[in-house]
Amino acid sequence: MKRLLLLPVLFVSFGISSQVLYWSNEIFVNANQYSNMHPRIALTSGNIPVVLWGGGNSTEPLYVSRWNGTMFGMPVVVTPANVDPFIDNWAGPSIAANGNDVFIVFKMQPEMMSYIYSRKSSDGGLNWLDTVRVDGMQGPTTRFPTIAVSPNGNPLIMFMEFNASWQMPEYVVTNSPDGGATWPMAINISNVGSSEVCDCCPAGLISEGNRQIGGWRRNNNNLRDMWIGKSTDAGVSFPTGGDVDNGNWIVSLCPSTGPELFIRNDSLITVWMSQTAGVARIQISSYHLNTDMIGFNTQLAPNFPSMTTQNYAQIAGNLDTMGVVWQQQDMSGNIESFFTYSTTGASGMVNNEMALNNNSSGEQRNPDIAYSAGKFHMVFQDNSTNRVVYKTASFYNVGDEELENSDPNISLFPNPAQNNVTVFFNGGNNATLNLLDLSGKQVIHITDIGSGKVKLDLSNIAKGVYFVEVVKDNRKKEVKKLVVY
Image 1: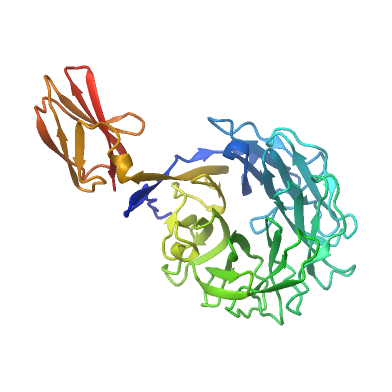
Image 2 (image 1 turned 90 degrees about the vertical axis):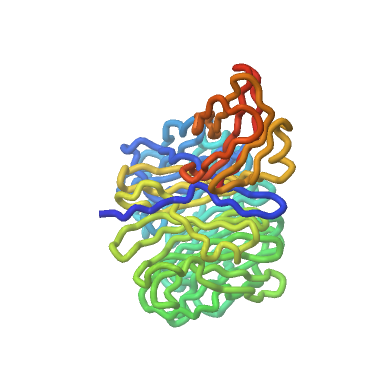
């Protein structure tokens, strides 16, 4: 039986202002006949989410669905007829967006005999152009494509290539000069470090300004640490790089998992799985891009039983605000999705984890994350319903001025409040008091409150943002905002 994981409704911190993180309901992206494997998310113009996933069956296509304002639209098949994509729980296709241009990349089945293809939509994921071969000059001895978009709107793809005998693996990057219409010869970015890449481990790729950075797990006589190659000339060359992982994990078996990357000013934040502590844990490091020095390297969420394993981390954010999702298996074999975030930089995410999924039956795995405009957008694979699940967590900033700028005829103390709050007001004939949630639902109702003050018991009230409403003479309403933490 699955254990119940309780997801905090919100988080409140106090200072000059109070910042509330509150959650949307879980939303199904797809009907269960469309399967749910390895979902990935990107944000288009207006921060509209587009989700990519597949079925895992050797003959099942890839699907994309776009949010239409109230729900996700009918899934669109984005792989041509008789083109079967490679996808599994540990690897699969990739998606990226810039404005309303959306790009996907995938490897065709059978993986060891086929090519990598990209596809583009110019209307936010509704309609798709023909597929374009990515590795025509190097395939089919290629694996694990991942895609990003440069600031000029051109996509770039990183993938692993081998020699004709499937030996000497290396990671390469190709930059399309024409919006994904063509893909030139890819260049090697993994020749730093003097050792080959881990030939069964996917990679991470990010582009920001003139920087392009690819990250991979290397294999130096079974030393499986994380390395990066970096370009400062928009992908023309990748002359430098370095080791972002000082854990020195030695393992002969393939980990089948790699790093994910996030750029914060002149630092690269990287997350990945390592078993340097004896069990699989998500690691996080800060790496200074100008000095090629590791700032810190630590476990992201270590405070779980020693038999618990963590894997497949994804990261997104902007400046000091960032979030990470990953899947976690407990000692009973249950797999759940987890989330952590920080508004004070990468180190603030450590030991701040919470369950992402509400449903605690079946497996909830393979989460992905995107961030923009104060909102985290997350998806994960829910195997109990055979659905892809979408969920958001949004920041709501409540400053002292904002708390006091509603109705001057009502005051609340304390605000934010925890167990109780006192409402001060000027009464009137037949005055009543209501406590309303954000949807307008009445949570507390008190009649004939007179004039002066009323103390409300909040001990059984869920954390969140509410409105205190005083109604006078059956018509005049005075409203004040209240935060319960």
